[in-house]
Image 1 (cartoon, each protein chain N blue to C red):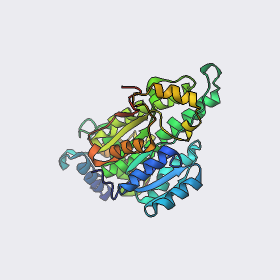
Image 2: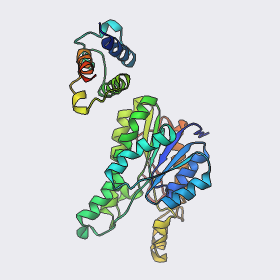
Image 3: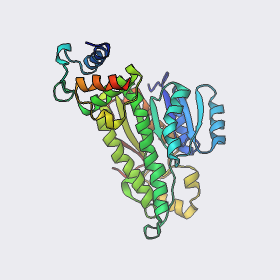
Length: 245
Length: 77
């Protein structure tokens, strides 16, 4: 099950905790992977760990031209992009009343607009191939909201609506577009929380623990697989029961 | 019929699965040949590939019929 031999996957934010684990899972299932991110060193380290079938493509997602170029670079490196995982994301948290236009725009640009540009860039090749898998990493807060994250929540909810619209358009061509909405996952982002904050969060999670990047990667592997061909426009919530939606 | 028209017709017949004799000068891809909007995007992609040309989005919108396509490609080459 979930054999990706012969498939090529582009993963953004592959230097991060969740992105790296997604790339490992796809690679482990046989896919060739292009690892994209802003920091080259961790990407090189990850590619070295994988050995064969791994390419590093540095890209700053706040640079529109670089984003436009990324799908083509991925095709040059791998021959095609059969699977796109839009995982990269940033936060610029602030109370709504204090949020600057720049904090809003930065988060929308990187999390939502770059996702749109990359989807647009890869879908032509997928249409020709009559096969494609797009997995957009949203967030639980896109569905529930979160104080201090008006911009982030908007970008993540925007991803869901965008993915559903694209899913409609390309479903007849064998292309699926889905989202994964992680809850609280053990990453550098959540490491910054203090014990009190963590305690509060854990109290809201029926599973009583944070999730692991590998648990998000498993969901991504499923949605990228041939077996998930009839799943499209869906949002897979992976959150330990924190929000049952 | 010119070579270009023959090649365009072949693409249209293959992509839209229509009878060759339905693909006439004034046949509209959408109204007469059963294409949806995504099919027309794919046709344009196929024309670009077959003839090694770039068809910008605003030009693509003006290509509504088989005749439009042949005319545009002839001029673009």
